[in-house]
Amino acid sequence: LDWEEALRTFNRLWDWVVACARQPDYPAQVKMLAQVRKECVKLAGSEQHFRWDDVIHRIRAGQGKQAAQMTAALVVLRAMEVINRFLLATGRMEELSRLTKVSLALALFRAEKGQFPDRLEALVPCYLPRLEPDLFSGQPPICRRTPRGYVLYSVGADGRDDGGRTHSDTPPGDDLALVMPPQ
Image (tube, rainbow, N blue to C red; front, side, top):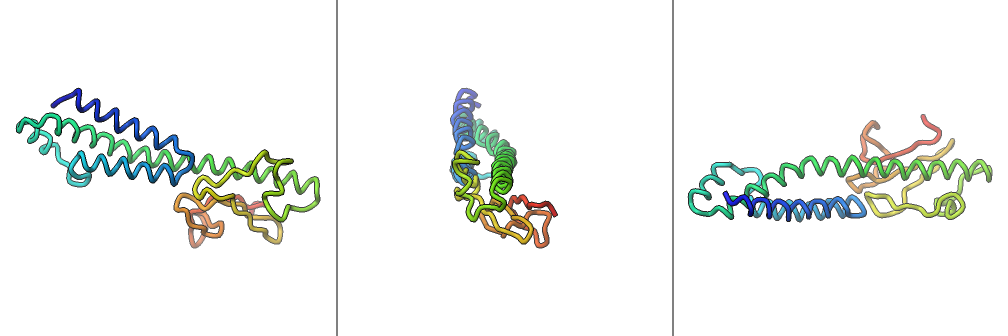
């Protein structure tokens, strides 16, 4: 096995994975990771049917460089499973933090004005420096008034507006939601 080629290939692919994690929102991360996955599958031959016997066969056939690239690609593919989960979890935590800031701004607005604003944009610049976009859609968070308060939510990783339904609702949705007052 050409270990220098394996490390060179791994570093190239891993730098690409790191660049994915630095993308500003989850859809951009997912799109870029799909490109990395495609390159890894191309180098590995197949993600589902990869066998170490194929690497050994290439080494015996004098194809050490190709065997090294296959090995590096497989390692990155396996790591990407964890990276995908990590990016989703950190994206969800970041989005919940953003929603919490908007919720606090809504509470301050209501305390000072006696009612909630008609639009979230009314919170800027007095209560929020800017209205951060939903990490999953790139659009502003959604705020739906209720008889007693509001539901403030993000569309979640699937990018679909489930009307503020979360995993714990029936039927379940993928949205991240803050319900005020809590039910």
